[in-house]
Image (cartoon, rainbow, N blue to C red; front, side, top):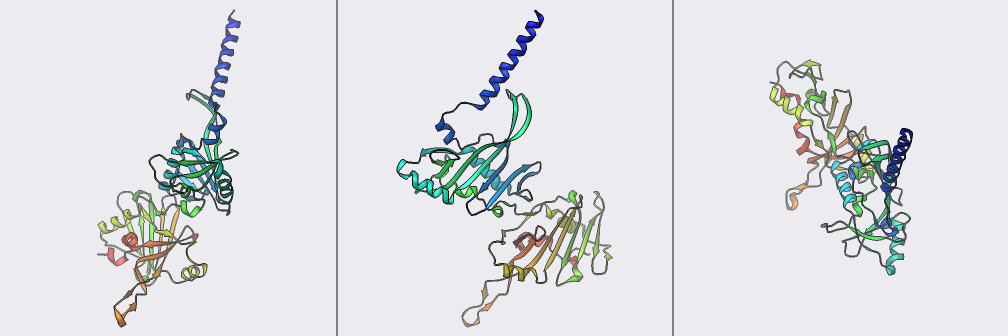
Length: 351
């Protein structure tokens, strides 16, 4: 009798597991499967791949420290959040009419952007209480086309579906194509320095035209002890303004560039600037001995001064300068307004 009860219990457990597993797959009509673009649980999204017909492609991946672009650059968190919100809120307005179907499909096959969305899933998930055997699952594959004629909808097509749909986001007026950009540069974070004082081991600043102002700051300990060295003669600065130095060290928590110029400037001009003598070279080493190095160059000005026959060109831009970052991979535009506070010379700190 006890043996029979044990068998019955095991059978019931298997029945429950089978019901949970198959109900998790859900039942939906063909139309539902072809029009279900949204992913409601974006917190479980681990990876998003976007590509177009021009061989542009980007892979956004989530790790413990945030989102990465093609696994080697930090992503712009704000833009990724917008993308996740977009994927979550996608709604179908209407199927594409039969009269427009062929033209829309033909255009999407030429300019459409393929989107793949991956999520964390579990091979055994019992009422969201018992989760076993985690794996990464491809949950959506769809194509994003261009805007409708009134710019209030976007043509989209789920892979292997028979017809495209006009998709929108409630309360948003506009189209969604550009939110699915396959250009990696568009997703990269603009942050260059993101270090708290406790993270910093040393900072070195070199002035290309004034080497006597070069200096290095070493953080000796966490109790406010620092060493400033004049690099020209390795002289230890015995007397310095502590408040000014603290303002300098705490200014590296969020320093960003304005725009990336890799694809906006001719390679010849870019190379010419990079080969010229730098204005500044700034190196920050953190407590893990990881270094961030920025090389900065003078930017020419497009402005003039004076009037009439007395007009003269202003050769130097006093608002912006060029920068080389990410081990020389990215050529960017910097603002003096942002970086002035960390570009002051040694004499500024000395008493």
